[in-house]
Image 1 (tube, rainbow, N blue to C red):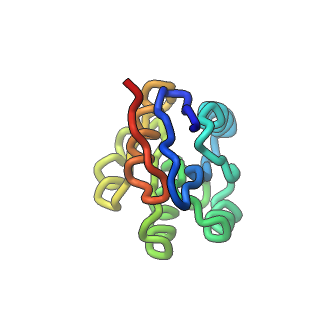
Image 2 (spheres, rainbow, N blue to C red):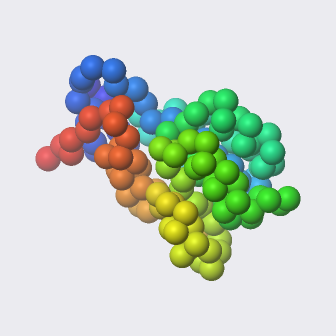
Length: 146
């Protein structure tokens, strides 16, 4: 039985695997902080990080994660445009925005954003997103320990 950092216990079952997450954020400091927080979860596999949209999008397409944590600003392309491209190819992908800007939230949710987190990211807010990701992903069963 696996116990996650937030007290959730993984229920043994057929075909279970960890949540697979990729980070696409041009802010290196923020990307590192998000990665460190995600690595605290025993049930999350961090597949990689990229600060550059083009190679990052290629990596996401190759690795097919369950979720992408993405900033709204990626330099040559916006995070909204990048996620739109990814969702066309991978409609079940969960897109979690991690950004300092509140101004794109409505547009992000119109694009089917899974969540929209404001920087600086906190452990408490990330934990709520991780719980929702667990419930959303069909590859793992979870129950909360009393």
